[in-house]
Image (cartoon, rainbow, N blue to C red; front, side):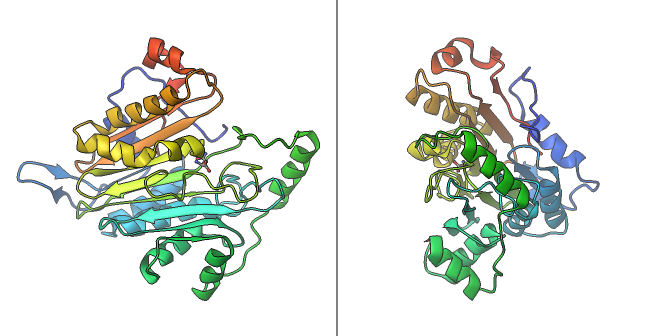
Length: 330
Ligand code: SD4
């Protein structure tokens, strides 16, 4: 929770609030504005889950130099993949129960091209391997050893992903854990990023080490197109964080984009996505789910529910309850 910051909710009209930190974290204004209709202009924008400021700043650098949204999201999330202190993504990620760090990632571009890697070991930048899957193969997904082999063939280096810190914590966890096959609701996080470039084109990326101490072979929503990430360049994009099983069950990010297609704002769509998941889990209060979204106009939204909050409370108290907050996006 240390790296997380949340905006206390006083209003839900967060689009302005959400994009403000993006601009605040970057010194220069975008060079260009993009006409998407005779009456509307949009500026490039990047948003990501949680407060990964360095990642969004990197993506912003790409966008401000007229880079594509695809290059921006890849470069942005790579910052977190490389950060050994981020124990939820890439190098330094928490291992599974057997002590292996397995990574999941996916990427999607303006033309609905997409690529993903699942449960891949020993490669520091799964997002870049996902992009290679998208660009260099006729496939969308490569998993496990096949993904790793493909990465080596593409010139990626073998890297030890398990840091001393993560190893030590895992060894501690083993002492106290009952080693039950339950969804571990703690120690999870993820970076999902969405960007619009100066051509008005949208792309997204999502990368994670998944739930800390997950069962070997477990894959969540993050590398699943439609669940952890979805982009439709005519409408917008969405990405998810939280308990992946719940996001997969509802095809969460696809749902958010479809809700926007039907006319909901990104904020409304994210709220509805969270509400649907909570409704399917009535009575359960042990999980966290969050979505962020951007539409073609450059409006953004984000919504998150935290553990300790049931669907009944959510229905009754809605936004007044402090467990449901719009989440801070860098
Ligand atoms: C997963 N969705 O593997 C990821 C974890 C995550 O915030 O996003 N945690 O289920």
